[in-house]
Image (cartoon, rainbow, N blue to C red):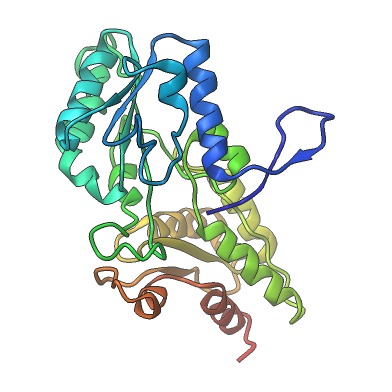
Length: 290
C-alpha cells in the first residue's frame, strides 16, 4: 500500500496519509455533499471491511447509508444498478477484485448497457470499488488483477491511479507505478534515463501522453500486474506502436503476471509478477546493456 500524498489544499504544504485514509476521506466528503450517495457491501459497516478502510463511516452516516449485505456479489451489484437508475448514487464495495466474476452480468450486460439500450433516457451512476493484485499473501482466489476484463467493455470507466492523492479522486490504486519508479531509480545509477508514465485510467486511455513519451525515449516497456496474455499491456503496446513506430529503436516490450494462478507461498508469489529488479533487467537488455 502506498503511504503518502500531497495535500489538495494549495499553500498548505504536504501532509502524509495512508491510501486507506484518502479513500475514506473521499467517500465521507461525497456522502456529506450528496445525500443520494450511499454504500453497500460485505462487512463494510461495523467491521469497516477487512482492511479497515471504511472504519468510522457507519458511525457518521448510519446503517441506512453504510449497508452490510449478504454474501452475494451479484445481488449487491444488481441492487446498485437498480437504485442508480432511480437517481441514487450507490457505491458497491466488492471485497476482492477476483469476485467481480460473480457480478459480470450485472456489470457488463446491465450497468454498461442501460444508457445505450434506453436511448439515453436512463443513467447508471454506479461506482464499483474493489482491491486488486498479488503480494498480499492471499493465494490464488484473492490475488488476481482482472482490470483488463472490464476495460474491454464499452460503457464502463476503469481507473487505477497510483497515489493516495489520485485515489481520493478516483478511488483505486495501481502498485506497478511504484515498481516502475523503483526500477527507474536503479537505472539512473547505470546512466540509463527512464520516464515513468502513470496512465491512471485504463478507459479512457491517455493515448497522446503515451505516444509522446515513446517518441522522446525511443524505447518502451509496458508493466502491468494483470496477466500479460491478452492484457492491458498489449493494448498500450499497440497504441505506442501505431503512434510512434518510426521513433522506436526497439520493439515495445511487455511485462505482466505469469499465466498461472497466484501461489500462496510468498517466495513463489513474488516470482509471478513484475518486480523492480526484473524491470531493470529487461530495461538493460532493451538498451543493449547485457
